[in-house]
Image (cartoon, rainbow, N blue to C red; front, top):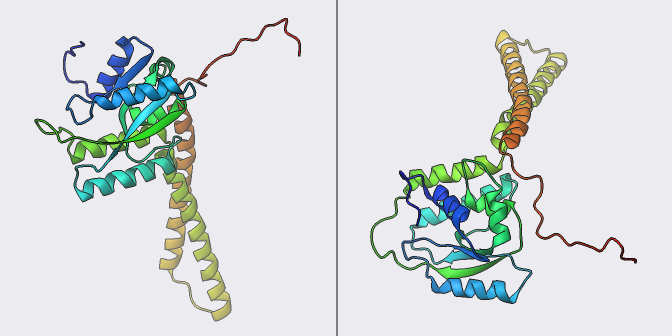
Length: 252
């Protein structure tokens, strides 16, 4: 049993548990009894009967949530899967059982702001997903309100995506392109129809072009910041599932 000096959050609790646990198989399960411990036996059986499987993850079905919450979560997984470097499975929970080598890989990710669903996906390993139905909460209410879930989701996207740093560059490039197109159209209209180009049109073109250049420049800086951001996380360059030693004297 580990007692924190204060509430450091769910992610810190899971990390502390992984740091101090022992054994060939490790299980992460919530303590609100919505996740049945009986499913753990099924997970362990899968791992014992198939050496190629490293992790068994439970995917929640028939969630006892509002339609709005289901809609938000479903689209979050789609968004995260599209704009991050990892693959997110809709409904995948932190309720899972895995081998000790998976634990070692997760602990090698020393970042402070952690997002376990992304970390499990990033480290790889063969994962089998099984469905489960969450039980009704026995007592109390979840402390995860909409604002906390939104922050948690944004932290997950930021932790595994550099897209927010690059958006200004894309917008800047598009702005420069559109301002050039508008300038060309204005010149053609002037030459063909002999229409006077007032100062307002010239000002719009100039401001749009210069603004686009500025955003594009910020986007280039964002590329460098993105690389530096990834470097500061000190993530492992690679993770080996297993290493097979060969006899140096063996002949083929």
